[in-house]
Image (tube, rainbow, N blue to C red):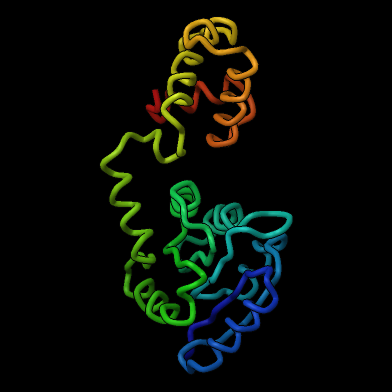
Length: 208
């Protein structure tokens, strides 16, 4: 029996190419192809695929958020992220959300079937450079997972110690506006919206 596959990809040309590529392999049956993930929970519950090919960057809701939703009710489906992104932050967001593997779009035509087979065999398919980044991240402080610069780490540490913007500016001999810029970037990288959230995350994940 053919394995059921669902595609989520907002680029119509790439989505059509994926459909055509899967059509050449009799062991796979394409049961759905969508340009967004706004109804992902209902679609996956209805179609019951064994494999999901998931783009990260889509309108309305990201593929990473979609994976989190799927994992709330389905822990067994294999989810391979398809993306142009090649950086630590997106890699770890995807893997931590529950993705099975990760493949750069430039490798799809040559490595997609091998990636699916590896996932089905219990592996975690990744592009070589992505795997190398994962290994390297294990040798460095957790803060590097969020790509915080050395100065941003210093500012975050000072913020976690209860220092005000003015005190931080004095400590590092920079302007308050520069402090605000650093903190804005810290919030974006940590994906938080307040000082309390930033400090809490920094402490819980031992970033400071």
